[in-house]
Image 1 (cartoon, helix red, strand yellow):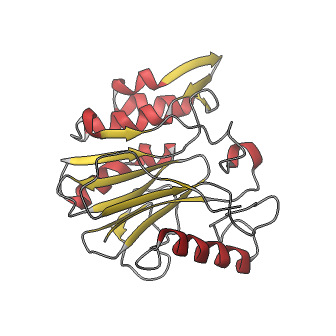
Image 2 (spheres, helix red, strand yellow):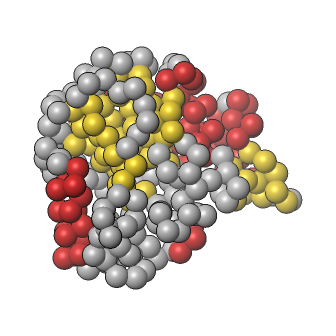
Image 3 (cartoon, helix red, strand yellow):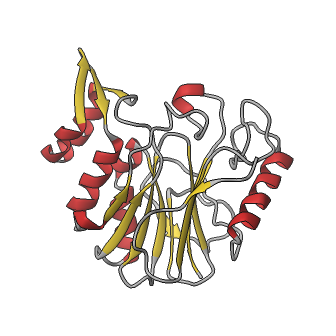
Length: 243
C-alpha cells in the first residue's frame, strides 16, 4: 500500500509545507498496522525506523523531524532542540527544520505566521488545551496574525468526558460551554475541534484563518489510529516545515 497523507487545505505562504499521515503504507504488524511512527507504544524499533524513513522519502523532508516526548503539558520549544525533549509543541523560524507531533485521538494543530516566517506543530489533547499549549505556541511565534490548521482528532460524537473536564474549561471561560453536549448524568460529549477554535480565537487568531477539522479518528479505523478505540495502537504524525 502506498503511503498516504493529508495535505492541509489552507492558504499557507509559499515555501511552507505540511502533512498529516494516515495509517497505511508502513511495515508495522497488528495492532500497529501499518504506518506507526511512535517508538513509545511497544512496536518493534526496526519497524518504526523503516516507517519514519518511508515518511521522510515520501514527503522529501529536508531534515529529520524534531520528535518530542509529549506529556500533555504547556511547553513549546524550538524544534532544533536535540534529543526528544519533553514538550507538546515545536516551533521554528528557520528553513529546513521540521516540526512534528504525534497523535492518536488528540488534536494536532499547525500554526503558520501570515508572512510564512514562523511555523509550529502542536499536540493539543484536552489536557494540553486546558494547560495552555496553544497559547504557549502562539507566544513562541510572537504573533497572533496566524493561519491555523486543525488535523485529525477524535470527533464530537465519540469523545465522551466527565464533568471534571467540562468544569476545567468552563472555569477558564464560559465561552467553552458550547463545546460540550450532555449525554447522561455527569457525562458529556466534547468537541475538541471547537475547544481548539475557541482557544485560538481567545488568543487573537482570526476565525477566518482557521482551517481543517471534521475527521473522527475513533470512527475511521481504516485511516486513523485511535487510542480510545484500541488502547494498544500506533501513532500518526503531523508535520510542518519551511523549505
